[in-house]
Image 1 (tube, protein in one colour):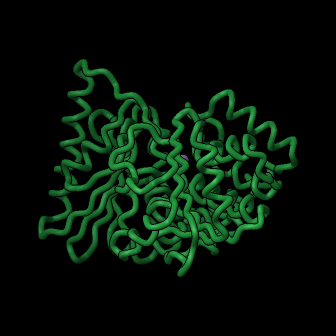
Image 2 (cartoon, rainbow, N blue to C red):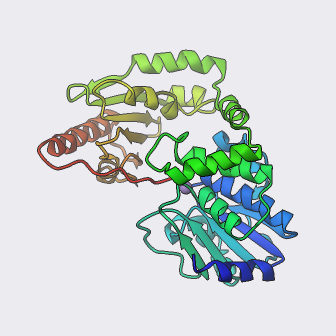
Length: 345
Ligand SMILES: [Mn+2]
């Protein structure tokens, strides 16, 4: 990593460093931001945390999530962007007019995504290592290389990054190096079972939601010989249950865990005519982006969504979506090879 001397000099020269997450925060971005907060504070620096959007509820078990602000601090000397290197994910910063402010100071980018479009043009240091499971693992490697202080608190946050992006060390992002790093962190005193319990506790559902989940699953409909599963949620249920738990994540994993299911779609229909859909796919059937784009939305191969505001009846929109899904899946079966899995974390 030939950019480390430059990175070191930027950090040495700065007193106040702002750590920046993109508009799609997840366990890796928040864990990276909090780990850097610990490391830099231990080096005697002042730190601020920025993200254009609010931290999602499922991340609020991480101590320090509430220190992340939607505003850049009035004054700072340098910035570190974690877990993103494309301008496409910084719309909030552009909308609020704060981007020139960030661009005016030395900016370091620490990322691990391959194939990045519109790379942040004002970065003075850009380290994007797609061999790392997570931005957190990259930060750990840099910290070791540069002898940065790695407290147990910092390493606990780094473990959160790794577990988030590797889905508990279960996907292809977990390399031999990742396991080494995990082992070193456990040896240093990070309590993985405690971290796991905190995460589970924070994602538990309120009691009425368990019964509601049963109702939703009973209403699952299947198309194309069971390859497409869908559930529709009407306004009255959105009003009653959505504030307590998002219906999509409540049932979509179970739908995908059903034999034969390739694609799981959760539709929501509102009284004012608005229709939204969350699309998730099993490995080998990454049609989510194509399907969402056809419906006027977007996303990734395995997770996408769309929102339609028209006077068209809900059933027509649903039929259009399901029949297009059938078309793509049928075409896919007729000889085109399966898309390789690409991580989007
Ligand atoms: Mn990541």
